[in-house]
Image 1 (cartoon, rainbow, N blue to C red):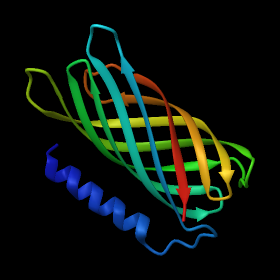
Image 2 (image 1 turned 180 degrees about the horizontal axis):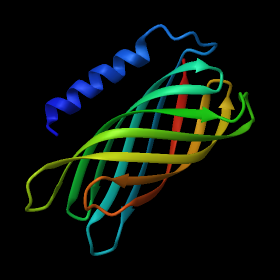
Image 3 (image 1 turned 90 degrees about the vertical axis):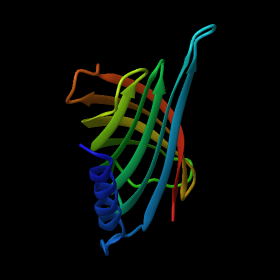
Length: 163
């Protein structure tokens, strides 16, 4: 798969999330990350940015961009998925959520050429409502790929803003 296909997927995904879904809430912007530094070695990082559209108070259709750099490997993925909040939260609430996503991934290992693959993402987390529209999120992501890359589990922390 080429970078052109990634761009087409992003455009289609953004179109879906900005279309007129009937929702009690409007949109959600989320960012989460992690960083690992091994003394005397290379470092690793994940950064995930997503925007979503609520289709009801508990379900969000999400478009996400993820970058990954770890120990000589780099990857970028663009995907479409969903997030389910187990109940609607307000200030002070701790709300569990689960998510699923499918993404196109462009990756390279140091000294090797780029290659494309499909990324499957399942995640579970907790959202702490600092105020009614802002949460501190912690989640575990389970990533699997349709190539020879190993499956990855990532614990990340971030914020979500509903607007």
